[in-house]
Length: 33
Picture 1 (cartoon, rainbow, N blue to C red):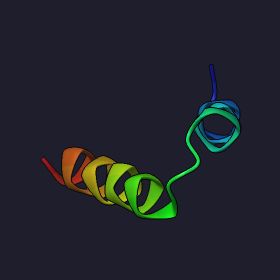
Picture 2: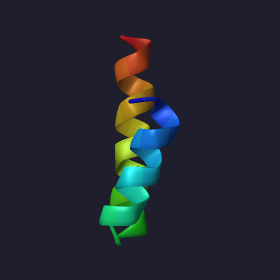
Picture 3: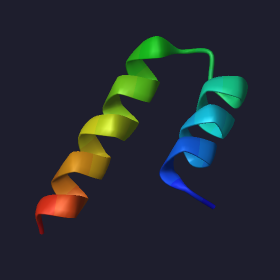
Picture 4: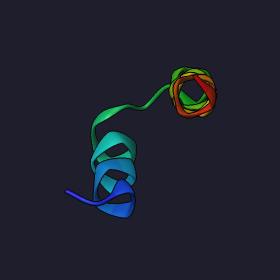
């Protein structure tokens, strides 16, 4: 699964925009580790 596919899946299944922002922030932190 590519990042784009995963992001599309998240957007399709998660309605809360703030939760999506949190997931993207978590992704950025995990990439930096």
